[in-house]
Structure formats: structure tokens, C-alpha cells
Image 1 (tube, rainbow, N blue to C red):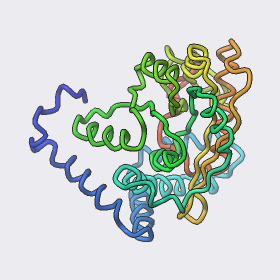
Image 2: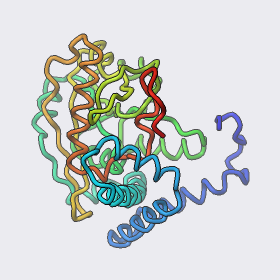
Image 3: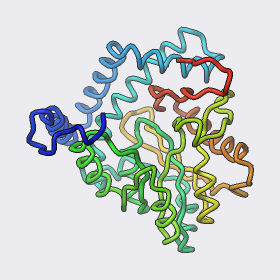
Image 4: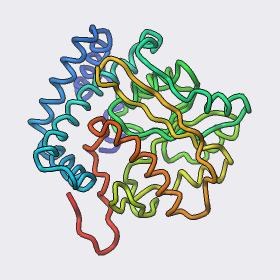
Length: 304
């Protein structure tokens, strides 16, 4: 629903559920860690049981990307994915509502030298993230080591949009609308690092088709375009929740060499290859709930 259709006053009853959500997130952020884990798991299992449409989307994505898995293995991974995303809800609340400093002891940072080298040269950089359930907490923990701006999709609900943007601006330097290409280019050219996640389906007009887990996927062309317009290094960033569900690993890989190449499909395939390698480390933590293969090459049938 368009923002213009929401009431102007945040005191309007239509916003009361949003206020309740915001208040709940603030409370959850301060709960003991073991309580957060139990709550996150319960939320994930509840969604797994009730969200039939999202369960179907998740199962379809996993069937396409992991054809070697048996039906039993795939069903188990669907369940694990919902649990991981339930944990992601409480992690997001923590990342948005708490000072990340209190979590410093929970994160291991690898590959700092790659970003430190770019920072020492005074260059802006395009940081390539992935839509894991840990995304927003990852941004908060990243801010403990390096400053960055973030590209994001504005929320339709203007009250939640204000809450979300204020939270992210506390973590990141600036939140940039995903449609604001000039803003992204301007920030990078002025020496800022911009965190950007190019692993969703933005439609045929903005994309080329490139393999993702062996399946042709609409892959946004903007990554190579930004790199070309700014001359900035493209820095792949991995962020995972460790198996203990209490600690995290954040890892920079070396900047992509000879990128962009001038071949849009090849460049998109390189980005997808990195994203795929990050997902394979902990596949249950990826946001399989979104329709990654919504746009199909001409002549192909819909998969959802």
C-alpha cells in the first residue's frame, strides 16, 4: 500500500499495531540472550506452521538450488530456514535498539586487512552483502570496525519507515534509497563505503539473466554500473551466525579483480558466484522466503 494512503498523524488508530511492534522490538532487544534464542525459535516455528505461502516459496527455492537433496532433507532445511529467520527477527531488534558495543565479544572479524587497505588509501568502496537473516545485526557489528552507508528499500508504512531509518542511521552513516543511484555514487566518490545487497529480483528491466545455483536468475546490473561510475573497489562481505547461536563471524574477502569487465552477464555471474559461496556455508540463514526466481527468461513458465 502506498505511503500516501496512510493517515498523516501517527496517533491514528491505524498505527497502533505499528507502535506495538516498535515497543515489542525495544523490549526484545534487552532480553537475556537465552530468552531471545527461545523467542526467535518460537517465532520461526510459528511462521513455519502458519505461513503456507512462504513455506511453498522457500521449498521451491531450495528444490531449484539444491536438486541433490532428498525431499526429507529439503523439508528439514525449510524448517531450519524459518527458525533462522525467526532468530533474525530478534537479532534485528537487538541491532536496531541497542548499542552494538555490548556485542563486541560475540563477533570474530576476519579479513580486516582488505578493508583497512582501502580505507588507508582514502578510497570509497562498494561493500557487497547478502540477505541473510543476520543482515541488520551484521550491519550493527560491522559498525564497530568500519563506518559504512547502506542502500535499502524504504518501508511502505511511514511510521515504521521512520523507526527503521533512525535505527539504521545510528548504525550506518547514511541510509540511501535503493533508487537513488546518484546518492550512492556521490557518497562513494566522496570516500564513503556503501553496503549494498544485490541478491534480489528487481525485474527484467533492471537485470540480466545469470546463473545462481545453476538456475538462470534475474540479476541486477547496478553492481557493475556503480563500480564503473565510481572506480571503487568491490568488497565481498560474508556474515554468519555461528552454530552456537551466540557468536558471529564477519569476513571480508579481497576486492574483486578486473571488475567490472564490460560484460554485464559475466559481471552478474561473478557476483552471484560470491553470493552462492556465502550461502553454501550456512544455507539455512539465507532469506529463501523471497521469490528469488520470480522473473523468468522469456518462454519459461513461472516457478511459484
